[in-house]
Image (cartoon, rainbow, N blue to C red; front, side, top):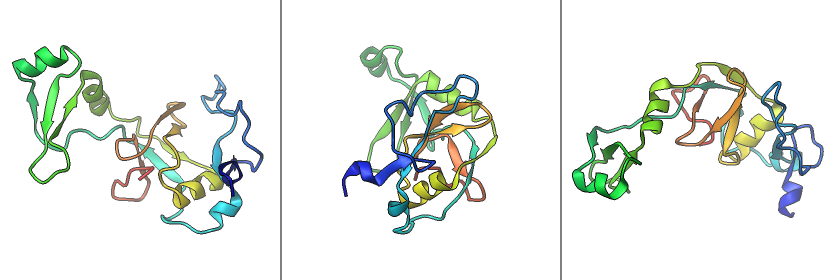
Length: 162
């Protein structure tokens, strides 16, 4: 099965080149790509969930420190804080920009969005299929995944797309 036959639009029609056109009235795309019914019928690796909460991006887990003089010299104004990970983590730490920290502080709108069955089943079959999703309250698309802005409703904070 080639990659194109694995995907359709949410209504079952073929994927068209213009499916990403955004309706300025609603903020939604003309069409949303999903895994084909045949692909979804193979079963799911996660529960089928239909609604998610816009909470905003996750913030730092560990203590932040100011940048050293050397780091400021190296990066200029690009980063404002550094998060040092504890020993045993796969990385040493992470630099944070002012915009990233502001987004964490602002959080999401707190609105709940409910998606169609075909999109919900696509997430359940292949959780990392999408790079972003729509907030019905903000009328915008935002990232999903471990650093995404949404959690599944009724879970203990499970991020959409993980």
